Length: 180
View (cartoon, rainbow, N blue to C red):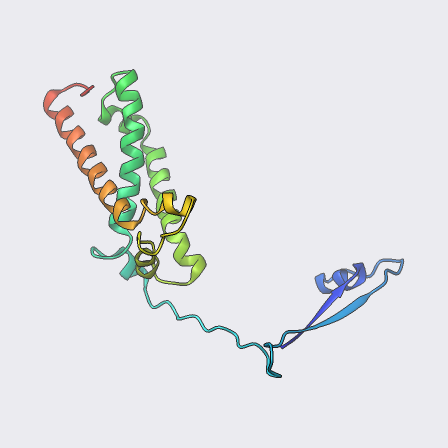
């Protein structure tokens, strides 16, 4: 496995497709060879498993995205609704009616951010979520502190936030005014 590394202004300009400069820079060429220690053969390139999870699989009812994305939106939405609810006594439905466009934009942003690890890594979301468990995150220092925030904790927090949001809507609909 050999690679040529060209430095200098002329080589860079030629690769980009620009015409050469009127002065000469000193072109230098290096050949870098990577070999496994103790062998004459090149280092093997790792082969990653291909992702067979389709968009339909991700967004299916039992897929890896719907409950997780809804839970993330519900957790942040529930906390953000409590501010105006406590300070201004503004009901939830009034808050939703005032900022419906931002809520849709926020939901789409959270959905994209939830799918980004799948897009970047090339692995399925199901595999990525399965790897983010407390057993796999054990370590020392910050890693030990973050091991509490594994995928199961996130799912249960999202479920509780969805129930809290629905309960707050039901209480305010029955009561006819803000809950707090």
